Image (cartoon, rainbow, N blue to C red; front, side, top):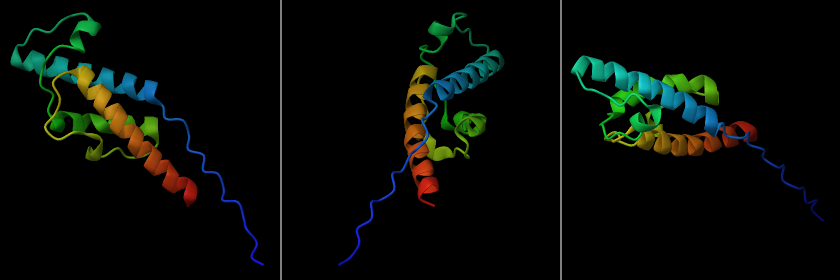
Length: 115
């Protein structure tokens, strides 16, 4: 009679969503301010107004920012964390990238735990 073994429980570390949002928001604000200075665009001074302001953030800008998330999540974040075509506000980018990165986090750590 074959012996049945329980499958090991896979424990994936808790996704650091708050830290991802904080780092991504900070990097995007810096990038948007730098670009607006070059282009002569006046931005809101209040953070809560700036993050919801409609302005195009292209995916190339975000690709450069993704490396700032590597130390937060513990692996190299690639462009699969981005939606092609960019975003229309900092808030939109942060919400989408945070959600996409959470899926990549689960995949990454599921593979790591199984290995």
